[in-house]
Image (cartoon, rainbow, N blue to C red):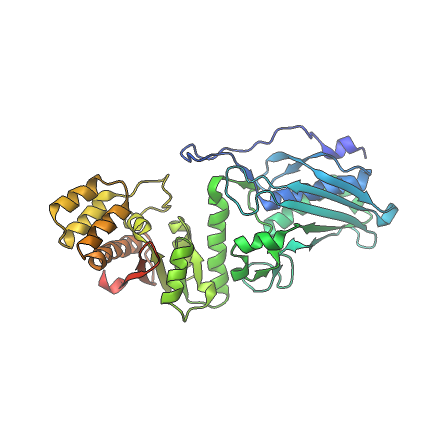
Length: 390
C-alpha cells in the first residue's frame, strides 16, 4: 500500500462551518482535542505502515467532515514488528480561549502481532485518569471520551484494514504538559486526575467554547447525579461559585456546576436527571438575564433589559429620577450602585430574584425546589430567595 493512497487528498481544505457572525470577538473555528488526537493517530499509523510519517494528514471528524492537519515531530523507531511510529498535532482552537489551545496531541502507534483486528487505545502522560464513576468511562482508564475513542479507531481502520486482518495496533495518546493544562480546567472536580480530557462530539471547536462548554455543563450534572447527589448548584463563574460554596458548605463539591451562560442546557439536564433541588449563585447582570428568560445569557444574544431593572427599582421605592437614569444606563451594575446609595440593595435584588424564579419555573417546569443566592461584585452575600417567596 503506497503512502499516497493511505494519506489521501492531503491538501484538501477543511470543510469547517464558521461561527455566528454576531460573535464580534472572532469567529474562526478550531478543532477539539479529540479531532487532533485522531489526526495524530492516523498520521502515526501511516508512518508505521509506510515507514514515513507525513507532514500533513486528512482526518475524518466525528461529524463526517474531513479536515487537513499539519503533523510535526514524525518519527519511526525500531524495526519490523517492534517498530513504533510517533506523530504530533498541535491543537488550534481558533478564536476560542481554550485552555488546551496549543497543546501537543501526541500519538504513538505499534503493532500487536497476537491481537488480530484489535485497536487498543491507551492514555499516556498528560491524559487524565478517570477516578470517579459517572463519566461514561471506565474508572482507572484514560479520560478519552467515547466519541473521540470511536473517531480515533475509525480513522485507523480506514487506512489499516489490511494490516488489521493479520495483527492489532496499540495507540497511546499523550499530551506533554497536560497535567499543567488540566489545572486550568474542572477536571479535578470531575475526578479526572493527572491530565486533560480528550473531548469533542463534532471535532470542531466554535468560538468561546459554546459547544465544549455546554458539553462540560451537561457532563458535570451527569456526574453529580450518578454519584447520588440530589441537589445541584448552578453558578455563572468562579466568583459566584466560591460565593455559593460558602453559603452551602454541606453540599459535596460535585454539586457545584459552573453553567456559565448555558441556562437551558443546565436546567434541561437537571430536570432530565430528576434532581430535587436547584440552587443558583448569581450577580445582578446574569440575574437580570434570568428574569428575561434567555436560554443563553451571553452578551451577544441579548442586552440586559433595563426595563426589568427599572421596574424592580420602582417596586422598592426608588425615586423617579433614579428610575429614569436606570432606563437610560448601559449596565445592570449602574442600577445596583444607584440602589445601594439609597440603602435598597437587599430589597432591589430580592425583587429581581423573585422575578427570576418565576421566569425559570415557567420556562423549566418540574418537580424541583429552586433557590436563588445573590452576591455583589466582590462575592459578598446580598440575599437568599426561596421559590415559596415568589
